[in-house]
Image (tube, rainbow, N blue to C red):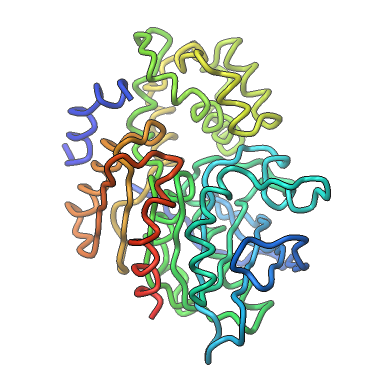
Length: 380
């Protein structure tokens, strides 16, 4: 039994109280466009909306959208270094995407996940670092969003760097992956896969905040007969989005056959409910109420591993993980298990920073003083 499995079993009560799948990189059909953004985040002198080719977890061509922000002043020799910021959860529907919020002339507020990142991104821009940020495949595009699929999200995080550099010569190809929550997992998977891209970029490392991880070990514990524990209700919205994405990614599984009538109804609503709305809607609904079959069924458990797992091998650049100990969305026990597994698998340059009193919603702001110099050091 691995260290991570042992820690998960030994901390299951704490959770209830509170092997990456690699696919070959293939060339996608070119479909890239870039346009000025109607508004910028603080610290940016210029900003662009970009649409670019990438690939999904099955190696199929796909399109993603995202944003590019440039610092003020002339770029250094070789171009601005880049942070590819992987956003936290906004939802699975187009209306939730940052690219759609920016195209809505009446919208004044950005998605919460974007707001939570601004304390760090603003300081990066003011420090002379460009920021690119994917919306992931299926948000603002014709595809479905495969929420928390580690491979497709990592591909989108990586491919936006080269797409932006191809369009904007003031950008270098020296970059760091960073992200929060959903994006924290995407950034880590990016780090494990970076060498697949070879000389196409100069990748320097990962900084991950409260990464979603180990759900592939937790979700198979759920069945219609799982005892009702109130704090477990925190993962109901996550389960809805995961099963929505998995149903599209793996039609052979017949995900609907695992769902109760209530579960099918909530999956039907997933596209129309962004994360804050969905969490409010399912408040008090236990995840097991969505099910008529156990997710420990071998086919489902295997599919969840392939779909969700954050790799714990393959890293050749520094990795930093920041986790709030007051986080009730991503339990600190699971992040601790992930960090332990990275070390056990020989990832030598790992820094794990548990932050007392920090929550899921302020971990980025609470750690700017540590994360900013760490990221800038990686880029030097």
